[in-house]
Amino acid sequence: MDPMRGLYSLLWYAALPLAPLRLLWRGRREPGYREHVGERYGRYRGTVPPRILWVHAVSLGETRAAAPLVERLRRAYPDATLLLTHMTATGRATGRALFGDGVLQAWLPYDAPFAVRRFLAHFKPCAGLIMETELWPNLVALSREAGVPIYLVNARMSERSARLYAAFPALTRPMMAALVGCRGPNRRRCRATCRAGRARRGRHRKCEIRRRADERRRGAGARVQGPLRRNAPRMGRGVDARRRGGDDPRCARSHASCRSAR
Image (cartoon, rainbow, N blue to C red; front, side, top):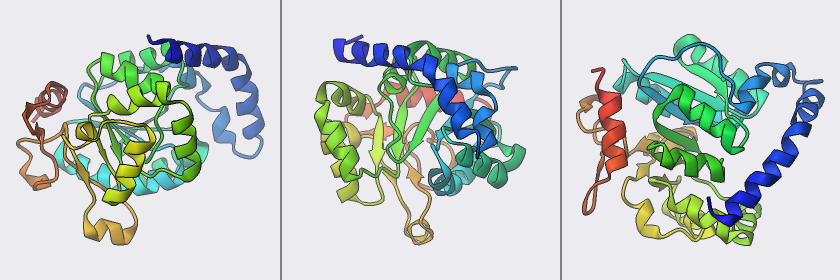
């Protein structure tokens, strides 16, 4: 672990004892925050089926935006299981209303290394797709160590987030560089996101995520070019594990895992 991420992790360890108080406070108006608290520390119950495709939508807006993508993945991989993670109670409630029992739902753990490792060990996702800019340094780094390719979907970078990313380049550069794919609603937004983390542009052109015009009109959804396609004709040209200069081994591994059920 590099020194900057080590310091970042120490801050998380210092803050974790206070996290339940914050959940109790927010739970006054939104009781959902008081449910499944152990999941935020990486403690998940029960067993999960193999071949998990993981989509992270932090809150209400991201969950609605992810709906076309989730439905597309469900059609293309009927034998895989979709895992939808959230950080807010409104996001989790929206996911339940949109998909019911058609997907697994869980809290994304806090970005402390032990909690992230528990999450990855429990669900063993073959790929992760993160909506907008809900990126966490330990989550991205430990996913890469575990062989889980991470894709940033519908990337949007506010001015505030851009300033925050630029203020800590030693933390954000490795995080952005570890992404296998990054694509926004348009090229300008994606480039702004990449520049904010000072990531090399080439790493974000290997497995693109393109947004279709009809989905843009609805204000939601994305087309994935990354870990999830080589023999899924029903998704058209939406997903392709190929990249310039050869196949990304992380794409190939996740593709093989997800397609093995077909």
